[in-house]
Length: 274
Ligand SMILES: C[S@@+](CC[C@H](N)C(=O)[O-])C[C@H]1O[C@@H](n2cnc3c(N)ncnc32)[C@H](O)[C@@H]1O
Image (cartoon, rainbow, N blue to C red):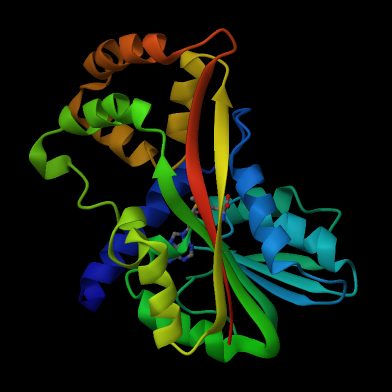
């Protein structure tokens, strides 16, 4: 991808997450917090350590890291979407050793960092190779890189996600999902890439994370609050949101159980040392 293409892709991603920021992780569905707990358990920030949290969103993992390092430590959290950064700042008043700034995860601020961590972010980067080299250079000798990404997901939901894509004209459909292609296609591919970039002690764990959504309305609110928003905005622009709901709601009614709608995904957490 050339520089202009990469810039356009980043601008598009940042704009969608900026519009989602007001409700991101705020609609009552426990999901990003659970994944952040997995990440921070693996990166294990210690009191006094310096942590860089990339693509911080509203701070699911940055806030947890800040509590772990305590006042003698430091957490710098960055995200391309300004309103995500504002959301994190508004929730971090009691953690003055956590700072949040607008920044590109491909360009980590100078270290040395004890921990560089990124929750559900690295698959968005147009130039992951260069970013991995920069993280390695920015990590201290005892440092670790940790990041989460997706494995398998609940296939019983495929008809729902297929309809959302299939009802869009071809030109509006997303290209191959970057979160599941290229190096993110398999654990082996990703770990090989890290080895190629000079990382050692590379290890990946997998945890099944379930999202329990109360009802159909909450599912739609949740869908608008994260990356899926991009597809819903395309439907909105094309005037097909109504027909989309008419097609999706009966599928959701079939999925719904007594306590709501359950969806799961496997979350992989990869840890590596420079
Ligand atoms: C799925 S969210 C994850 C947010 C947060 N880490 C969490 O676990 O809740 C992805 C985030 O990555 C950010 N992002 C995507 N590409 C980025 C880049 N190149 N630099 C910085 N942030 C980026 C988005 O703006 C969004 O906030």
